[in-house]
Image 1 (cartoon, rainbow, N blue to C red):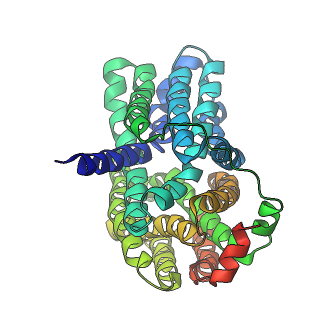
Image 2: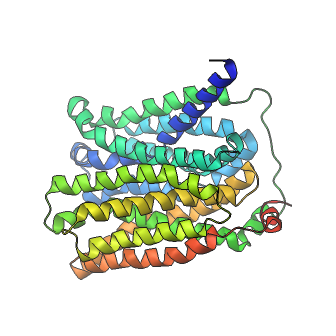
Amino acid sequence: MNRKVFSRVLLVAAFTLAALNLRPAIATVSPLLPEIRADLGLDAAAGGAITSVMVLCLGVLSPVAPVLVRRFGLDRTLLIALLVLAGGVTLRSVDGVLALYAGSAVAGTAIAIANVIMPGVVKERFPTRVGLFTGVYTSALVAGASAGAAVMVPLAEQTGWRVAAGSAAVLAFLAAVLWFPQVERGPWPVTPVEPGRYRRLLGRPVTWFVTGFFAVQSMTFYLMLAWLPTVFRDAGLPAADAGNLLALTNAVQIGSTLLMPQIAARARTQAPHAVIATLTTLAGFAGVMLAPTTAPWLWMVVLGLGQGSTISLALLIITLRAPDPESVTALSAVAQTVAYVFAAAGPMLIGAIHEATGGWTVPLGVAVGLSGVQVIFAYLAGRPVRESARRVVVSP
């Protein structure tokens, strides 16, 4: 293997491992929550706040990413995020409630920054293979979440919850080590802030079409993650089957996140892909609402195809709707700030509706309705943007 090929393989491996790190720190909390609460004496609300803190950070702190990119560049910013993630996960695993929440906030901040810049990294490092590497990135997101959740309980039984929860720090540090050779040597690039850049960005309709698509997709994803196992259990399925159904939909998402961006990136418009993927999500929620025990595996396959396709399309559209890596990062920051703040309310909203109605028909009807709204944003965000409009969005 010559040096050029080896460098390319190392880049792909480092990029993939970095993407794998963007969900385990969040996904590992839920399986360990009973042990964490028992050890630290937390009530249900305080236990749930661990994840809420992290998801909220994904939205509130996303605007920090473009600032860091202007100061350090994309490569160094990703390296910093991975090291901070390793530190945050380690901190939350040491003794004390304060360390638990502070470490969760630090880890959430690191993930927020990495989330925002990864589409820009795709644009900069793989400009001719945007569809493929958007698929690699989003597949790694889903796979990291699934694998992290799957191994936590067995690992905690052998080592205790602190070591299990802290194990994600090892993965983040390893990703930082692999990414380090990608950081360019020499002086740090300092990019001046373009006057009025964000005002123009916020004034463009395409910004809000993309943001709306991403926001509704994120809300339906997190409410699915939080409540679908409970929906199936309340419908009469055993707890193990309910967990396996969630695992099934996550597994299906891995395949759809890998394939959909490669198909859509080659098309002149991504509107049909985004609309069909969103309608597939809607069909999955409708199936669960109308017949949760008739063919639950079918609804989970359908939902996995829809959710996996829509998240990968949302990230692909962000990458395609801006002409250069810095512009992609700026658009990504706006979209993800709104999306994750919006998404954080999803599980709480559905839980409150369930409490008020005493069943799951109305909450799942809300999920179907949200998917209907998402169809509109899918069409608008998926349409191609005139080249002149793209330049105005991101240029002085």
